[in-house]
Image (cartoon, rainbow, N blue to C red; front, side, top):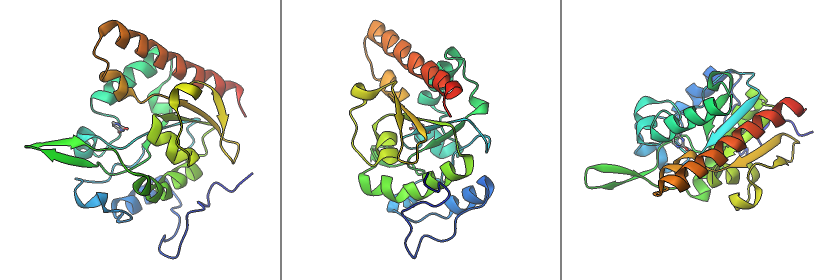
Length: 215
Ligand code: URA
């Protein structure tokens, strides 16, 4: 089994690995590994207990998360919280983070609109995600959406063809891929949105079940 405390992205400029989540958040706050830090308010580190069994990975902080400095506290976060509750998962017992730790946005008038991180930004930020994985050592990881799936697997993945299935990362950590909660907010038709929500809750409940069964 690969040593999860040793990200394989290291080069001479990576610096030391953090020995605690607090030290990691401090190191992340000084991150200049890609240009995204220049326009974000602050870094948004992952949060949750060090020995959480499930680690959730989102895409990147949104506008609200950028202001609060905490992951999944905006509209997608509210929906995520509700879905976790409906799936019987206690968020406080899980570790919740993002593939990319700074908000990437573009200005439209006075509004900052979400902009998707590119592969370079995802790969540069993997330094932090890998360290979170190393410190938490979750039994199971849930990738919320394509960016998280890309960050964790290094591949472009069609979510609909794998969602809710048990996968294994190269180091054997269990992985479940599902949709990003913000995709549900974009479904215009109420009935289609309700079905999409139900399917999301089902994936989360399955992840929870697999976590209980998996080693
Ligand atoms: N979307 C994400 O992927 N992460 C957040 O923290 C908020 C919205």
